[in-house]
Image 1 (spheres, rainbow, N blue to C red):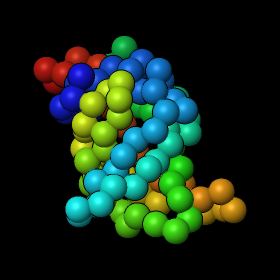
Image 2 (image 1 turned 90 degrees about the horizontal axis):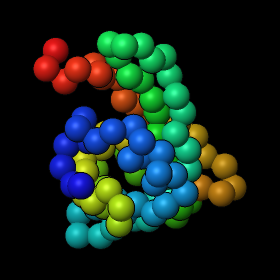
Image 3 (image 1 turned 180 degrees about the vertical axis):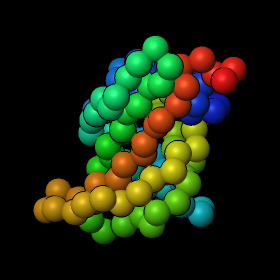
Length: 104
């Protein structure tokens, strides 16, 4: 199911909540957990949702696009933004705001 994240249905991400994603950082990789999927405003025209990832304290990521690999979804590029930190690790979000009809 690899490829363009815009073509992946929200349900594919919902099924991957709790699973591990490997973020490629140069020659290395960092394990991230897809912690949650938060729904946004939805209509017959627009679909909005946010993916929340958790990563380790010892390897913070900067805002940017990363190749993320997941056993169920495959490899996809996602733009991650660091949004928080606590004793369990760093939090990152990826925001989706897209037309339901991709031909628009």
